[in-house]
Image (cartoon, rainbow, N blue to C red):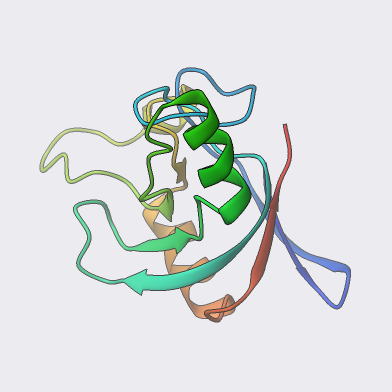
Length: 128
């Protein structure tokens, strides 16, 4: 679940789709995990290949250091985003399973709401 809060009070909640490996911190590019920890929402893209996206500031300096110590690329471009353009295909089942490469996906309607409610610089805490 994605929970929006304002001044520590619950504002909204949304069911999400993650990657096929939803538990455990992202360690490297291609592991299909969502990073866990504290980040910032730092860029909005109204023209992403999914319906709108807001970038999460992964990898942090700590993530980069960990990846360097392991000799791997930490990856990046982790987003909160809407649905893929499936043209005429039904989107009804898309939120029923984890299908992203580590991003956090919501419905397009939910993404519109998040887009309006969340300014750049908003902190995000991602928990398992």
